[in-house]
Length: 562
Image 1 (cartoon, rainbow, N blue to C red):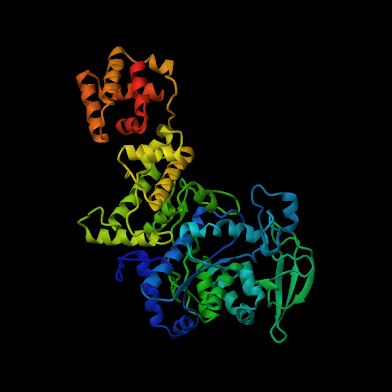
Image 2 (tube, one colour):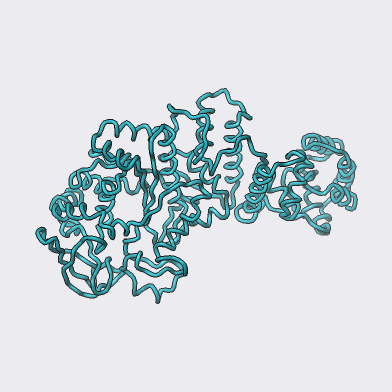
């Protein structure tokens, strides 16, 4: 559990607004009051584990986790549940897997398909855990479950009977939305698992015996393009894991079965005739349960905006976009959580850290948020202060620090780690010499600093534009030095003399500008001379900081030697 301070019960922050609206809805609905008394306030999300799960799904998980925590902060007994929709059929083979091995299994429930890696219960378990094993790093507190468990345990049985007994109502819902001539309005809302070949993606139920509670079905060879059934025709009970609802009906069935009060999803689901529209109608008209916020019986509501990478929407089964696990191993999960928490769900996030300085700006914003939380930075805007403090609290991973951690900007950290060839301990010594860190660091502060230095190394190696990357040359580059004139070389020798003094970044910066002026050099030409001498490039990091990040004797010797 997080320990929080500076709570804002009347906060305008989006998660707090959602929490209060759900609380108000329960107060005015006896059905929901009964649900809360039995199960508490359940925030729910689900994911089909059909491949590497992209970072875009992380937006939904963080939204639900954040709302759950906001509910707890106003005294509600809240829980976030994430379910793996592992009864869905295998309908695509993720990039990199053996097609010969998995093609015969196309159409089989993913919970019954073998894992591509040993040590996992199934194909679905492997891809689900690929992301959920990283949840602690993101501060996501979720109860994990499998949709197949609900089917096998019989939890869905009451809804299965209601749906099949009232299949005419469901068919009419489809007909009203899509017209009379559509497949969904002509078939029964349930897909049995074929008793002969074990496939679920190829079956069609065509008759329901209400008295015997048995379902007639056929396993079609040409129902879908991606799988072929065996042609078997039979009769089966729909209960206890013998099949599943189509997705839109399953979504509606989960809400009363689990007792869901809050569940949102991407905006593509929240369209006229979309999956949320169908689910809300079925939930209300067939299952007689109030659909969860942000939906109501008469309005399916609004979902959250996309999380794109470089303007491209991501796909799990097609392997498009950075996966949740991959991105979390290259960037600080807390910074990613901060990005997702601070952005209102109805605002698009186009996250493009590759070859840009957006990461530097994101880290700077987080650092400012942290300073405001610890009253180390003052703002005259009281609403901004309250908002930033709330964002910091809900962005926390683990226990909130009791005091502001020792910090350095990502830009300075990326400069220093490169100056010492990514030696972290040496980087700390340099920063202490620059007086950017205290001479003595507590174990906790050192942990924070090392984490930031690690992020800086990842930024340089994985994301930074070329102008942010450099290597300090062990020997001068002769071709680079040949570009310097006598005035530039003389000015660099004078700068070597200045470097013998104990100067702050600000003082050294002023000395550099004074030397350029006194030697009748444009500042940019003086900077260019220093960069060519040290890194063989015409541009580089902020010069004064850069020089102080290097070994002083090395800089003096280099400038004197050219």
